[in-house]
Amino acid sequence: MSATTLGARIAAPAARAPVWPSGWAAGLAWIGTAALISLWPDADDLGRTWELAALAAGFGGAILVGAVAATLPALAPRLAPLRAAGPWLLVLALALAAWELVTAKLDWLPRPFFAAPQSILEVFTDDYARLGESVGRSLLLVAPGYALGAGAGFLFGVAMGWSRIVGYWAHPVVRLIGPLPATAWLPIAFFAFTSSRGASTFLIALASFFPVTVLTWSGVSAVSKAYYDVARTMGASPWFLVRKVAVPAAMPSVFVGLFMGLGASFSVLVVAEMMGVKAGLGWYMQWAQGWAAYANMYAALLVLALMCSSAVTLLFRLRDHLLSWQKGLVRW
Image 1: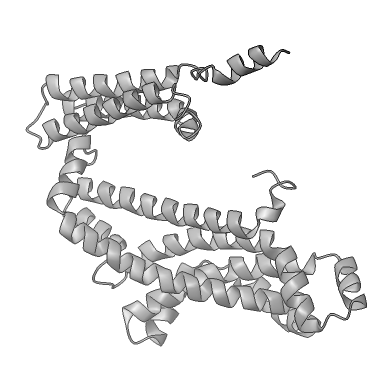
Image 2: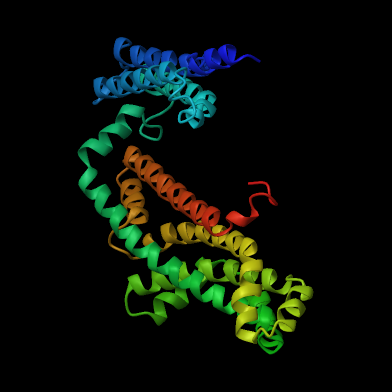
């Protein structure tokens, strides 16, 4: 290859990325949904219809801008995750249009049990103060409970997997009590603790304790003895074996237990807040159901789902950081 040809290739501009068909379809679908919401009259007097249409149109416009930007060589690599989400963006637009049709426009589903999308939007715009306070109270309840349960479960699981004596005495107890749902301890918890907050924290900690304990114990027990033998030949102490051999090798199992404990903690959170706590998402849902305000209940469920999903995402990021050495060995 001549120097002239090579120089021409280097000087030539980078080729544009391929067109993003699903992105264009999703953007147009969101704009079409906005037109449906705004132009088709509601079957009943509902608030926030125009605001919902504006949000859908703005979201659709943003997707179309992203579809144009995704073809630019400088932005295409950064927008690769957005390209992968194209089918989901399209399905969500169609789902919102179908939801709007069967509730607000055609009134096929009985109210108030099935709320229209604009009714849920109205909850976020009008009752944001109470809903925000409930979110804060739930976070202050689930965070320390999960941290206590997961921390104690990790330490107890390491002790069970490392020490035969601890494993001998603790294994039957864990097998007997572990399968019991944490909510079965409600009467005992509210009797043993002087406040509903303390009882709720205990139940959340108990829900996360057993999965983390069992998976940590399983991970430590499954570590190959050859690792210990190699470390001992180099003069490693028992404490070094636990910190540098047993625990790192068991971390994949530990994170499985952390994920399971996180889901159990949020489940117990809702039940515990329905049993005497004066604020929180569980209390908010019970209050909304008592007043037949099902739109408020659905809004709280959506917020709870986003909270749990965000917590799982953070846990995934932590796992990716701590177990980055496994990316070439385990499919993520």
